[in-house]
Length: 472
Image (cartoon, rainbow, N blue to C red):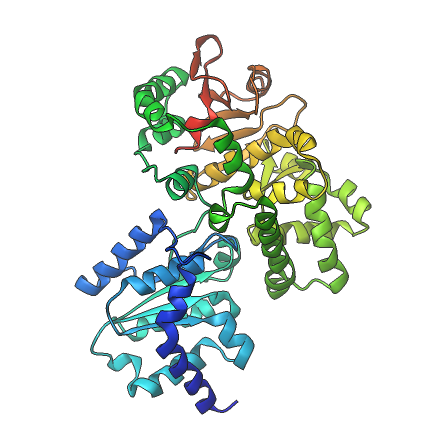
């Protein structure tokens, strides 16, 4: 390909970028899509750079497909009045021209008539789907070093996949902001205009209390505010959120089947586009991944031996497939609690990164009545989704589960503190937590269910309504 062909493409892209970005920020009826909370955080970062030249100057936003990353990038692009901005879909450029990021930047330098090191004014670069260039992290590091006049905002595939490609030298320059599925507060804002309330104290109560009594008292102090927020919210709304509301695109869709079809498309693109880019699986293995997810939707604890027999795949390949599904952001792997040796010997629990993924599989094979039998699994998905977001990713923090019969759903370890968590769709008793307490000495236990807020002094347990937990 001649350089002039790429230059012509970029010139056309620059002239049409505003219209293309506008198309990404409206719904099918032409109404503006809602701005997620992360938009305002990123907007502040950009403005600080423009006013003061401050870091971070390289922001990478990984996340599961369908979580609104491209819409977010387009909204940020349109929010800027500056002319010195560049928006590029790396997927489109790579697939259409077979170029890399440096080819694109060099062509852009020719268009503007100067090298990036010679820039007089700040330049804001938006790069969508940056992972389509395997050398993206080296590119960003070099770009950071080239000029202090440049800020880059880039989206990419899941957090694990992107972080695996970053070396220590690049990591010092790249600021990661994960784009998570839609929270219940965002869901209520988007659908009904309910403004989010400050629930930092609830989050601190759940993660940072010394015992159940302190946890209960902290949440009790917030209860009037919570109840006022939830006033008039139908209980079915929580169920709708869990089933379909964690993807932004589903919020404007009235037909559940259309939403399920969109989710299936997301899954297929991860399987047939993203995973082959990072993992060297043969065609037969790739074609079995959807079946693996289908089987995972019906269970929680997975024996690799049993699963490999069912799908006729050797254990090593299956383990790599499960790893690829975790890295791509489709599933969360919860290890069995205990020593490293025990974690290897005992089956891991695989949850979907958002309950909407599981629900799409359940809907393909079960009646609505039968789906009710999976409510517990869907709620485990949403609780794990929340915990993976709020629990610090640094230090000695991790989530496990009690593999024994009647053991608790989760054991949250924050340093030396352990919190035992049980999740359920109906009324729950303390049996599972007490069973797990025999093996460890937790700071307290939490039961997340449809019950009222309650402190059970005898067992050092707090019952937290699911509706409260979903507000953190």
